[in-house]
Amino acid sequence: MGETQSDQNRQDAQGDPGDRTAKPPGTEEKPPGGTGRHPGRRALLIGGAVAAVGTAVVARDELARLWWRTPGVEKPRTPGAVDFRGATWVAASSANYRRADRPDDYAIDRVVIHVTQGSYASAVKAFQDPGHQAAAHYIVRQRGDVTQMIRELDVAFHAGNRSYNERSVGIEHEGFVERKSSFTDAMYASSARLTAQICGRYGIPVDREHVIGHVEVPGTDHTDPGRYWDWDRYMTLVRRAHRTQV
Figure (cartoon, rainbow, N blue to C red):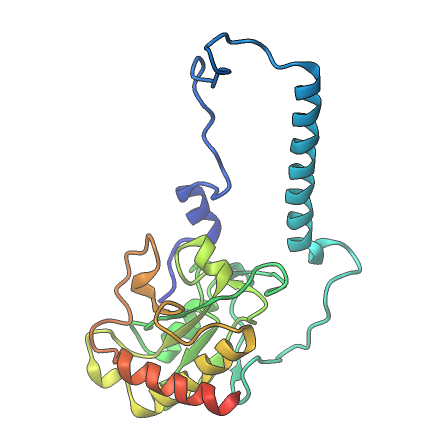
């Protein structure tokens, strides 16, 4: 299941990916010959111009990701709309995801497979609890039904890694990692169709580099989907479904 820490807490624990450590005093690079001469006015002007361009690019990218916070420009959304045909909409708590405009602000290139470690009802209850601070986009039941709780547009707090949250869609599967019987034929088939559609929508390669388990997310302490999840069978089904959609 998704992490019990918030996306922001994870970021604070890991540090901002864009952060850089400053060099300690006395270790600055010197010009060849070790003279320690100060740069000339022309060099300072050129360096300042380059820095200004770099700052402008960063600012532009950040503004693109925050477009929806500007009054009057929020993209219209239909209440109860789903991204996967046949899915049932059950809204997660807004505390368990971050509103976004993917893939315009964050490219999507991963699907992350989870197991709920509990019943379907317990997973829904957890994802609707603002104190849980985690949720996935989808839950697939053992009988094959699909519930969507967060739009794919938005960043769900499911992977325990900010970068992977921003770049992925998370799919929970009802059951327990230590019970092979949790993973039914109906679940595999339905989940494979869902993953194939996500891959087709965002141009994600259908392979094990891009369709991964929660256990494969860097920094996670989770083990799902576990040893009983049949990856060979699952990926065969995903590829077959993907071919029929293309």
